[in-house]
Image (cartoon, rainbow, N blue to C red; front, side):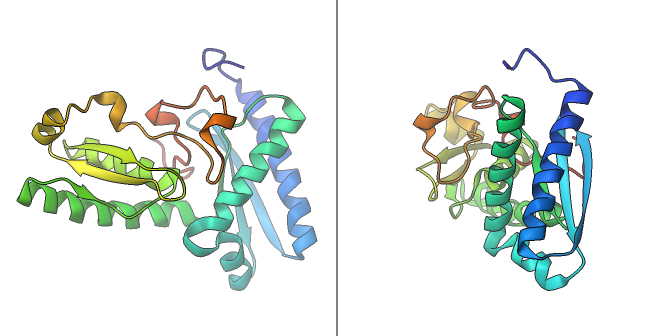
Amino acid sequence: MSRDEEKTVEQLNDEADIAADYLEGLLDIADYEGDIEMGVRNGRPTVQIVADDDEDIKNLIGHKGEVVDALQLLTRLAVQQKTGDRSRLILDVDGYLKKRRQHLRDLALDVIDEVRETGEPANLDPMNSFERKVVHDLVREEGLKSRSHGEEPHRYVTIYLKARAAEDDLDDDDDLDEDVPENVSRETIVDDDVRDSDDINEADPDEER
């Protein structure tokens, strides 16, 4: 299905149902108790796992959200296997994405202040695609420019003043990050979502854009 062929709400709900069934099976295998909440936000199916035990939640999130990222990739593949179409489903665990988004915004604002003060570009530590997307969005809101460099899992964001970005011959396309799952070669993926900044990985399922 191409970008121009928008999925219906019914199709998106079907994807969420498939994802919920798949995740329920995984929770059973792991012997975790928890609830699964489904919905559709911003034209994307969303699923959130709310576990009953704090330790379960920590295990499902992982270090810097690595487990959430892996679960989302597996769940998208499970949905694709059933529907035949790539899925842009968002998976969250106990509101982790919303908390992580706020932390990243605070971090990026500190770097933006540094760039404004010094006039020099500044690099952030390597981030996954969700984290880079949050930074790119905030940089735009603050009137600066940003660009991603490197290869996964060491891909990172550089923040520039607009004047400096012009000197370095950056254009709008350079600001866009790619929605490529972690640890998957770009050459192996043909995805209509790539290069569209609004389609990059995890938009907060609890927050309307």
